[in-house]
Image (cartoon, rainbow, N blue to C red; front, side, top):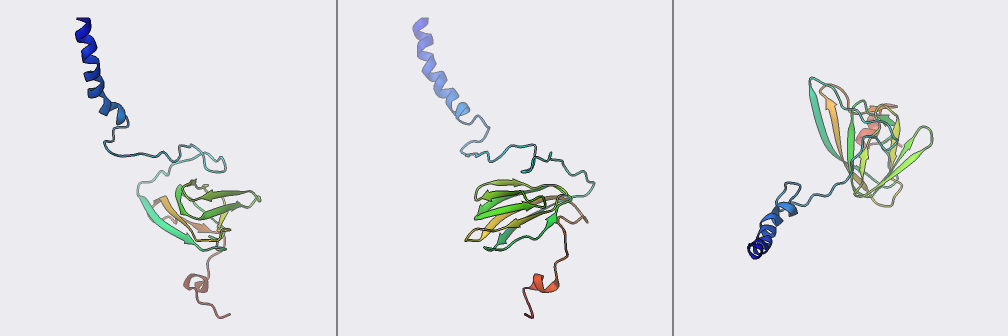
Length: 155
C-alpha cells in the first residue's frame, strides 16, 4: 500500500503542475504587474467617475524634447503608461515627479499640473481618460491659441 502511494505522488505532481504554473488562470500568457495603488503620484486618493454616460478615450501623446503639455487639470480619472522617453510633471507648489519608459502615471484629479520633456528624445505615453460623454477630459489653465494648435506662426 505504501509503495503504491509513493508511486502515485509523481503522477499527481505531473497532473497538478499545469494548474500551479497557470495559477493566475492564463494558459501560455505572461502577466507583468505594473502597478497597484489607491493614490495618485502626489498621494491624492483615487476616485472613480460616476456617470450615466461613461466614455473612455485612449490616446498616444508624443512630446518632443523641450516640449510641454501646458498647465492643465483633469475633471475625470486619467491613467497613462510611459512608452518611451521621460516626462517630468510639475505642480504649482514647485514639486515635480519624474516618469520614465515603462512606468505608470495615475494622474491627479482637478489639480493643475504641467508635463515637461526635459530629456533628449521624444516622450511618448499612452493615456486613458475615464470620462463622461460631453465633459472635457482636459481643462487648460489658459486656452491654446489657433497658431499654437496649427503650428503656424507669423514670427
